[in-house]
Length: 173
Image (cartoon, rainbow, N blue to C red):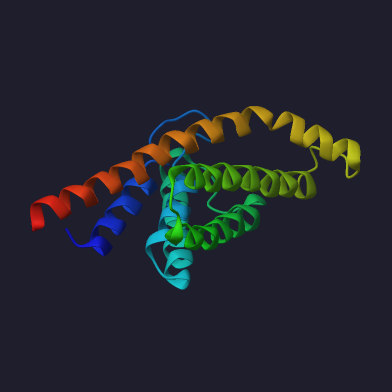
């Protein structure tokens, strides 16, 4: 199967993964961004990531009556665009532990940036160090879920992609 076609199939699956019921932050979004960065050019990786996020946000708004855009949009979209750029560094990886580092680093970075945005733009927290600490403390369960989900989706997306590529090399010869 064509590598580019397979990449878009995976991105579609990962996008749909946001739409199925799931525990908070247990989505394929981080891996979608990293995978797009690994497989596509920088510009295309960012574009595909943001389009996938926008389309799934529109679907979530339609099906679950969520707003499409909110205070979180700038922080979520910018974090995933940066993660897609980080994904471009995966091309030269020689071992799986490096992929694990990229996934966990991206998960933590996303959590730090988006919760900073929640602290900054919502009235829920005081705008001082104590409010920021309260925000991050309240978000710890989401970090746990995100990291567990990102690890699971890493196995699904990157692992199955590698497996399909091996099958292609064996059967296409």
